[in-house]
Length: 204
Image (cartoon, rainbow, N blue to C red; front, side, top):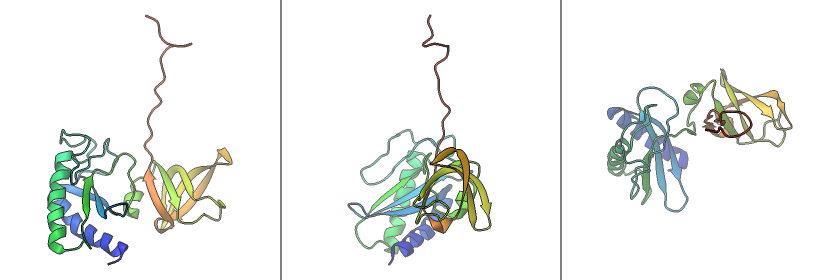
């Protein structure tokens, strides 16, 4: 079974199982560093958007947050990830999909979430994303990585407003299809926190 075929098979198995537990499948990726593994991203089935932490439930890994509570922005909690990991592990073993021993990780997508399909990316219009192309775009010789605001889609093309690295003040537009991209991820932006007062720290 090829990498792509196995990813599709795990996705087909995980998606309905996630829905049955009140979760939504965000994406599936295979890991080949060290032991072979499957990483599955899920969130509460409410709406799309970034969550504020990454919870991992896998063999020997309870995740960084032991509260088990769902993130208020709908990220799945540790207990949810752990329970879904248990159910998906049983399903994968029953279907005998894995080529051998494997590690299963289940987590929320996180603030800097990677997009696994075009439909999800369409919902990120208006947000800052980072795009890594499989090959340089002819309009930007030698350049494959871009960061900017996703303006939306036009047919199969996505439109990204991005500053040219040689002239950061001038906006440029990158058009790409989801198939053109090796990776697209959301870039979380946080407001600058500047100290109040002028000329240094406030004095009591």
